[in-house]
Each structure stands twice: as structure tokens, then as C-alpha cells.
Image (cartoon, rainbow, N blue to C red; front, side):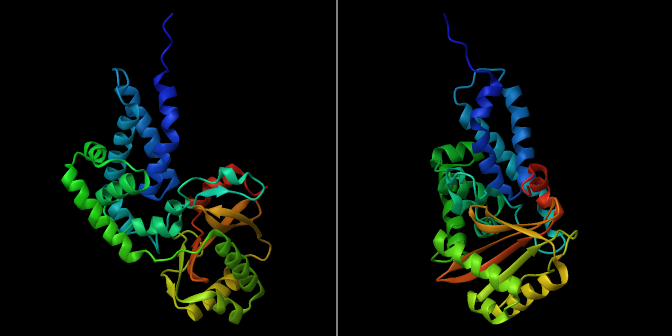
Length: 299
């Protein structure tokens, strides 16, 4: 008896996680990435009516092209965004869960890395991610993006140069980031300005994203004293006294989810270099925190 072939839907489910991983890194938005995955499924259903030799290749091709088109059309919208645009946070692991649930390639999920990718144009971003993060060969990338292998190599070289210029040379290990996060929270919640300043690098930057709908700074704040004062001032003026804080991995890095009742109020995380905090990322935009409310992580 001939073995039944898996259905188109079952084949798609095998690659859903991969497709979402590509789309989220391309777009920096969980909601937009889910939309791209759904659109990929619709197109896959039509395409799978005929025999397909390499489903994985076709699915990655569809979602990569969809993401490039989306980014090109979203450029004006993001330029008109109120305040600083930050990626939608991905809560990847909560204390009490198994550490094995933390995603692979955590560094390529970090807020710092996703913000860095925003400096690449859509095609550069796709080539860089497919080659350096998902380890596709140039021949495959060229077919996916309708480019020549020579062009792909040139684009990747240019993208890597941009990334190298902006990326710090040394990233702190996870344990160091966790210690800095705890010290940061203790200093900030106790209002200890000097202690907070001592945790920050000279070139520290405070980034915040309220999307014009929640408390946030209109521009990044730079310098350790300015950042420390801005943090303490924001806590005093903008944060309700009865919030609850829960530790989590935010985009694969130690962070905090702040709840006000049953609603997420803010998510923040940080990155560090040479024992000091280099960036603080705070997202308060309700649009970017809505998925946390739906998943019920306040309980």
C-alpha cells in the first residue's frame, strides 16, 4: 500500500517556526511577522496544488520576498512614527519555565541586533540574515531574491561592514547582564542616583517607544548622568506605585515585564559591555505589548 503523503497544511506546519523566525528578524514586529506567515500560507496553498520538489525553499522564498515588499511599503509609515521606533518585544522565557525553551540564536533576537538591522535596506537585511543567521548558501539566496550570486556576495559584504561598524566588539555574557539588570532595578526603584550612574557606561543610551500612545521619551537620551536622571524622573512621574515586575528573557536577553493590574505597562531590557550598561530599551507602546495581555503572563 502506498504511504499517504503529508497534506499541504502539515508540510507548512513543519516550517512555520522557521518562517516566523525569518519574518520577525526582518520586520522587528511580532504582529507583522505573523501576518507575513499567514500570507505565506495562503500563497503556499495555491502553489502546493502542483508537485513541489523543495517545500522549504519555496516557503522561505515566499516569505523573504513578502518581507522585502512590506519593508519597502512601510518605510514612510515608520518615518512618520511618533518618537523612536523599537522592535516589538518577544518574551521568550519566563522564570519557572524550562531553560531549554529559550530560542537558539538568541543574540540575533536581541533588541540591539534588531535595531541595528534597521540601518540596512530590505535587500541587505534579507541577504545578511539568510547567510549569516540562517546559513543559506549564496546559490540559494540568489534564487530566493532573484539576484546573482555575485550580487549577493557584494550585498552581504556591504551589510556586514555596516553591522561591524555599529556593533560593539565585546558583548557581556548572560550572567553579567543578569547581575547588571538586578543592580539596575535595585538602584532605580530605590532612587539611588549615584549607584545608578555607576552602572552606566559613558556612552550609554536610553531608548524608549510609546508609539504616541503611552509615556515615552521623544528622543534617545545619551550620557550616564542624563540617562540616570531620566530613568529616576520617569519612575517618579510616570510609573504607578502599584506595578508588579516579573523577570523574563526579552528577545533572548535578561529583562523585566512591568504589569499594572492585568495589563502590561512596560517591557525593558538592556545590553552591556565591559561590565557596564551600554543601552537601556523601554517599550511602553500598547500596540507592541498587546500580545502579552492575550497570553496572560501577568498571572
